[in-house]
Image 1: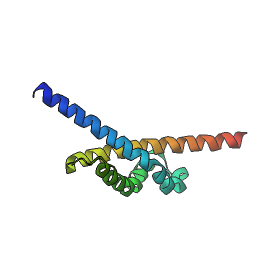
Image 2: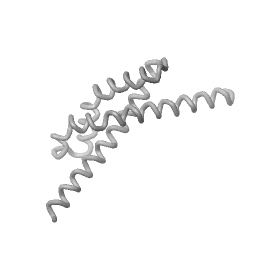
Image 3: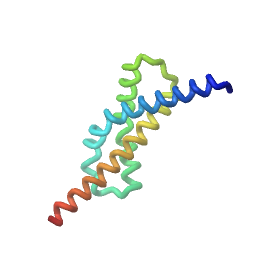
Image 4: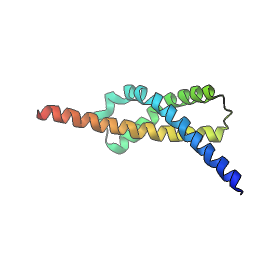
Amino acid sequence: MGLFNLKAQWMSRARQIALAESISDRCISPVWDRIQHRADSLGSTEAKGYIRARAGSIIDRQANRVIAETGHIVSDSIRRGIVDIATDQVVESTIRQIIEDRQSRALRRVA
């Protein structure tokens, strides 16, 4: 594999990550709205699975929009990779939001 091919793959991966970040940024709020009613009743492992399941359709819709906005033609395997990255980012962000929400409520109870 030549240097040009390595650079092309790196740039392609960088674009995939940038698209995934754009998708996840758009999805965090709607996913939170969808899962917040169950956030307190879920353990961390269960929360990750629940978020992943409930976020799927939101992330797929946003992926279609963001990819269409770029005008790029994206293969199914590249799209799946972008969606997987975005999903992981949404799950991580939502878990952090759950933790912050729990800590905030605990502090209010103490005060």
